[in-house]
Length: 331
Image 1 (cartoon, rainbow, N blue to C red):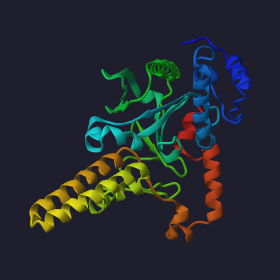
Image 2: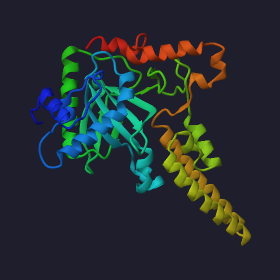
Image 3: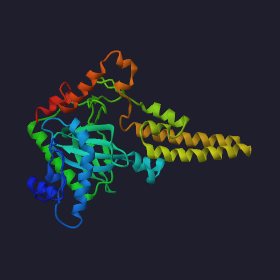
Image 4: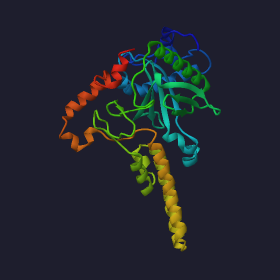
């Protein structure tokens, strides 16, 4: 790790006329590890653009005294994803950004242009057993509950920075005996109010936001391929599937005209089933927002919409009343 100071990096950003939000505490020396050398200006500007896209969300979701230490774009895909979707389109639905703070690691789902979506989860450093690298260069997280997470698309230099910061924070957690209570090592976070949602639950107890169940997504994709990806907001992938579905319809009709009814039915069912399985696999990875309290008529009779807006604002800035708030106070 290069020994830069916060002031040195801040001076470089000022020189390039790049201004980050003063409301968000950044550890600039780890976010921008190099400020001199070939092509470094382009890398600084790319990182700056990534941070600016995330700033509205970070301003809401960060706790008091929570510092952003590292931000890395990545993909969370598996070999089965590549098999079902193809390497060309797998990245359009598995794009993510890892945000490392002094309290936890956030994984934020983004679209293929880098805009954050309302789907993310968190991992406290006390839940990380090891961070390693696979044979193919993927970053591997081994968690306390036995789960293994794999992220691709992180260059070796950034992987070393990630491992160093995780090790540094894990050591601090152990030294302080700080181990927040969790429902699982990688906890789902509500995309509307940022409270923790336990595994197997698809409605937030705090705000009433509802999420798509994997079976609901899979059934929609089986009935009409690309429907499931549209509801998960995988727009690019859904459009490609829609184009592919038109070809399947054409081949099925052609088979029927030739009297090959069984072949046509098998082709249609097989294609739809493959799409449904792919959609279910993606839906099990994260919570995908189905409706917010503002979109549910049954909530309007129970809750004042103006109070909902105020509660969401308070939850985003201070997290009073949320489980994670108690943990942050111990830092």
